[in-house]
Structure formats: structure tokens, C-alpha cells
Amino acid sequence: MKKISIVIPMYYEEQVAEECYKRVTGVIKEIKEYDYEIIFINDGSKDKTLEILENISKEDRKVKIISFSRNFGHQAAVTAGLKYVTGDTVVIMDADLQDPPELIPDMLKKWEEGYEVIYGKRKTRDGESAFKLFTAKAFYTTLNKLSDVEIPKDTGDFRLVDRKVVDVINALPEHNKFLRGLFSWVGFKQYAYEYERKERFAGKTKYPLKKMLKLAQDGILSFSTKPLKIVGGLGILSVIISIAILLYSILSFAFSWNNLTPGWTSLMCTITFLGGVILISLWMIGEYIARIYDETKQRPQYIIDKTINI
Image 1 (cartoon, helix red, strand yellow):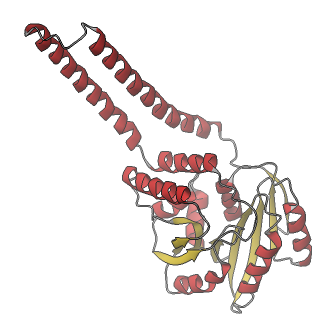
Image 2: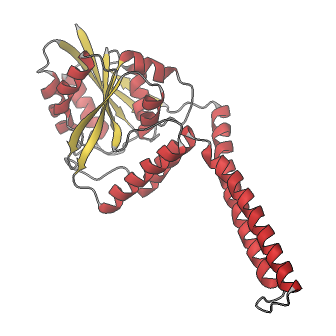
Image 3: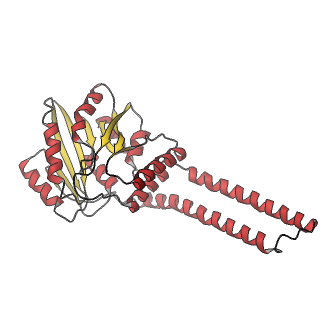
């Protein structure tokens, strides 16, 4: 009998934990030809999330729990879940039920047709602000212009993937993983499953602006070196502008044009422009160096406090 593994990260989800379990098991139990396991990852929650999950796991041995020593982030939680799956195919989904588990049977059918990555593509996104919709669109547009790999727009981490794809992802040694980008990067036969994304069942989003910016930064730096090339372009542009200012100053002196304050305008324009280019360049280069430094430390991406039913 084939087996499906469902990976669900949890961070302060006491309001949705039980409902998430009920909805997922209600769907999976109807698929008679599959065995299953549900792996919940407690990402350092300090509320009753872990307590609720532990009570569920006592009644259902198919529920497995990985609990972190502290909060390591959504991508680290999903990565940990992928390390422990035992199924032939794996579903990654969030606990807030915005990505309906009822879609899993249809995604399984696509997997049985031969597709190895079936990713959820959002047709609509209920309950999200205009600001979030705009920033999400801007992020994917920017990422795809900078990246050498096409990353589908309007997608998240909700997807069903073949076990061999998971094995490839698990073998990648990098520390700061941007998973939705990696699933595109590894290739294989992929299918975009369109669906309508609902509002959260309860609670608040765990992705405020700060975390969204961090995720965007991870995506861009992990899949592109073009910012470094942009730095070179800015350097060339600054040289051209400086030469133009110099030529204009020479012509102004030669033809006695009096529309310039002697020395001050060209000096300040040059200094401020070059200063901005240098600071931006140092910031971009520093981000890449920080990544290298982070990788060389070889610290684990997460620390597990305890596991249950694993």
C-alpha cells in the first residue's frame, strides 16, 4: 500500500490545531488505497499548541510531532518535516487551513498521472489586504527578473511532491533554504494546480512585514547573483555621469556660462551619487558574504527538543 506523508509547521496555532487535525484526517481517511502519516512541527510555540498536539498524538499514532528548542522559522520547520517523512508522496501545507486539505485527493490524481511536483497556484486570495497582494506580486516579478530559474507566481509552499524529489531537496547542503524556489530549481515534471485560497480559520498571520521581507531577501539572494552585476552597472553609470559633469564644467568655463556656482554643484552631485552607489554596493556584497559566513559555521538549521511517535 502506498503512503502519503503530510507535513504541517505550527507556530502559535492553538486556535486551529484541533480543527486542522480533524480536517486533514477527515480527508485522508476517505482515500482508502493509501496509508498516511501527519507530521506536525512545533516551531517554538509558547502557547498551548504543543500540548494540544501531544494530546492528539496519544489518541492517534499516525500523528507524529517534532518540537523545536525555539523558533527557527517556517522554512526550517518544513525542512525538518521533510527529513522525517516515510511516505511515497508528501504534502506540505500550513496549519491555518487557507490551503484546503480537501484538494489533496485531486492533487494525488495528478501525481498518479505522472507529475512529480504539484504546486498550488492561487486564483484568489481571500482576506488579504491590498498591500499584501501588491507586495506579493512585486516580489515574484522582481525575483523572476533577477533569477535564472522561473519561479511560478502566486504560489506558496502548499504542494504535493514525489518522494524522489524530497530526497533531492534533503540532499541539498545549503543552510538558508527558500523551498518554493528549490522545488522549481530541481526540475522534474511539474503541474500548477489552481485553487481559491481562503481566509485563515482562526488566529493571526505569522508572516508580518518583517518576516515577508526576510523571505523575499532569502529568495532573491538564494537564486540570483544579478544584484552583484547591478552593482557593476551602477559603478559604470556613476563614472559616465561623473565624466558628463566634468565635460559640462569644462564647457561652462570655456564659454563663460554663469549658471553654475563654481565647484559646489558638481562636487556635491558627484560625492552624493558615488557615496550612494558605494553604500548600496557594500550592502549587497555584505549580504552575500554574510551568507557565506553563515554556511561556513555549519550550524544546524534547527534544533529538535523532542519527537513523538517518530
